[in-house]
Amino acid sequence: MGVSKEQAALNRQAILNSAVRLFRERGVDAVGLVELMKEAGFTQGGFYNHFSSKQALATEVVAATLDHAKDRLTTDLEQPLAAGEDALTRQLAYYFSTGHRDDIAQGCPLAGLSGDVARLGGEAQQRFADGLEATFTAFGTLLPPASTRSPLSDRERAMALYSQMVGALVLARSVTDAAPALSEEILRAAQHDALAKLALQSGRHRHD
Image (cartoon, rainbow, N blue to C red; front, side):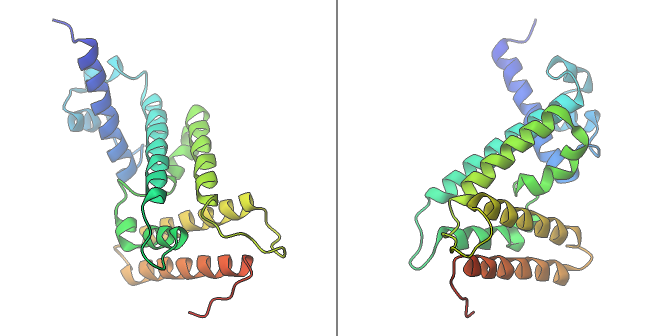
């Protein structure tokens, strides 16, 4: 008896969900099809009933992960703020937290997937580029107005800051086990520098 269209769609989604988690945790190249399909609850032979290749699956993982991240950021921005809190400071506090650093499977996909995307090429890179654009646009809405002395456009400011955030997160993760104190220091330094630059660009002065 054949599998219904509804069940086939569920099976495909189960494979995609497993790939999202495994690829983000360990990278595309480190996960074989046997392990992936076992994680999803199927045998390797069924993979090609749903995806033409591992690269095709990876491309869908990139798209699905970045869409989820965009939706999550939008949801976060809609959450009410505590007294004296602003949305940007809250986002920076979360991004540079050790909890976010350690949550590779659910954390920032730009930090988790950028190394793989560089090797995937083609459509995967286009999906990643679309996600980058959406992230820069959403993040840009959080930035305070720049002073007339700022040499950067609002788009450039959003791109520069988010790129620095991703870089700091990647570096902090790279030494979490070997040098945890250094890892935390990287996060703190990046957060303080980001806030200081934003204050300078907007013409304010930080005294903390």
